[in-house]
Amino acid sequence: MINYFVLGDQVVMTPTFMGSEPRVADYGIDSEYEGTKSFEEELAAGFAFLRSLSAGQRKVAITAASTSDRDLTAGAYSDNAVMPYEGIRASALNRRQVAKLWRIVELFVGHVDEPHARVRMAEIKKHTNETHFSWHGPTDDDAPMYYRVHSPVVLIELDCQDLGPIGKAAGWAAGSNQRHIHSVIRTPNGNDYGKDLLALHLALDH
Image (tube, rainbow, N blue to C red; front, side, top):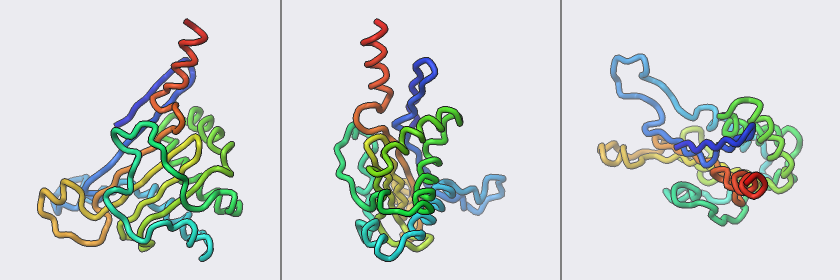
């Protein structure tokens, strides 16, 4: 689900919800799409950031030892959800770690054209000291996990589970891997769907 609001040369592409089940196309069939994987970069960036943290930083960043199907909280019917910040603040990171954190954000913001993404990243970076990262679950490569990047101007959630509704309905055997994945990016504090921009436009130009 993609919401795309355009006003002149300004763009708001939130909320955007994406997901996949299975995450890897492994049906054992003769198809050019067999083996296709989704969210590889987003997962890799999350793990790369987490593994750049010291042991002490990890204790702060990992806010839950396990995952649940209720981790993702800003999905459908959750407009302007009030969520407490959790995890490690970007102000507690070194420059290399901050760069890895921004890499995560860039992957989600970068679905729009590069000039718009550059403007959005500049806005997000103005709130560096208010940006938080949290992780739920194990840190093994193939384990179900969840991460969140949250600030006054951006909210990103990536939730990777074992079985989702499709796998359960199909009777797939339960295991401990990443077969169901979904993500959301939102603009907190009122500008999802471009509401703030639209309100300003109507107030000034009409």
